[in-house]
Length: 337
Ligand code: PSU
Ligand code: MN
Figure 1 (cartoon, rainbow, N blue to C red):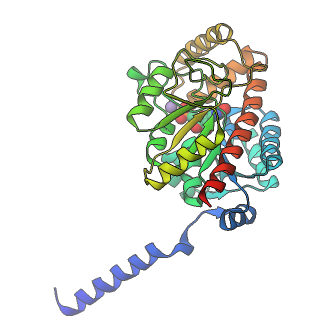
Figure 2: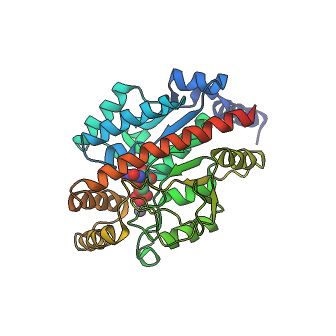
Figure 3: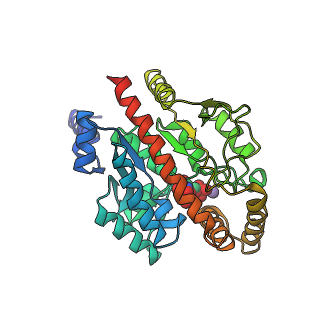
């Protein structure tokens, strides 16, 4: 290589390196309110996903839920950070009109369900999308948010050992240091296999057990019980915060799953919901629904079959989880000081 070529190569490498290091090219848009709370550590920030808005709940309950959960977090003294892709741009901390825009676009089926694999393509095509747990964890981690609240986790689907339908939520928990507060894996899944998978990924699963009952089970989304024992349980939010702090200090680079059983007054009895789920699974099989369509299909058929009871239950526990997440984030803020 002559001297000129060598210099040219060095120049190009230098340019590439400086582009790579240029933080101003970070495409993430964080709302001013969220940015400020994170910078001054003045209030706990809790992130929220948006696939539940775009693909999880019917309109208008989805929009009402999205706005009222934000309100619940504020009432607890926290700052909500709803995440989504708008016109291909990743956002952390949507403004009210942006949440409305997303719910309205979802009504016209104009939004994608964005998990990890869909991020690059959504950005390249400048498309809007609701973020799953996996991609909300990615955006939260980029923004510096440790705690995230939602309804139910994706997991290993029934027959997952044959179909390989394992949610990217599980691998994300294994690789991204964000803690998810939810009501356990969705009841439509194989919860035992989901727990095995999380163990392999090195993800802590701990269930809230305020009344110190023995043999605590992982909740199954609409149901307080799933028949699967929770590997750990906790009865103080400060303990959950302490676990997050220690995992951060050890730089584990993986997430934690904190499960909050749905409140007694809205939880659905498992005998009632099991038949409905089996029926929905059968219908999905007959209609050849698979991949990213399966979870939204199942949630919709369950809502129809329960005359909206499942939707009511879902909304209620998202609120409960948001309260728990804010308490955990609050305690973490104190412990970090
Ligand atoms: N929790 C809900 N409703 C939902 C979901 C979670 O109460 O719609 C969404 C989450 O965004 C979760 C996704 O990440 O379903 C899982 O989809 P899949 O199984 O295709 O990975
Ligand atoms: Mn799947």
